[in-house]
Image (tube, rainbow, N blue to C red; front, side, top):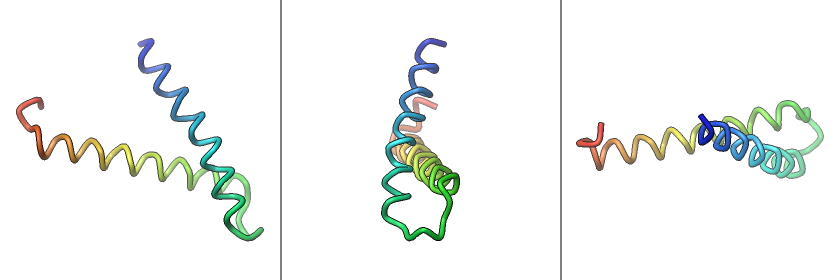
Length: 62
């Protein structure tokens, strides 16, 4: 449970920094909340891609 808590904390911390980059790179047309959602979506996409890469090349672990 401790590893899960640490992982979630690191992901949310990364999202804070990533959302600021997205918010600064776009014009003022999107809200701050939308930039946080875009950052979280990017992190989730990267996590799923990494998981699928591992599952495809090391199927005996699963």
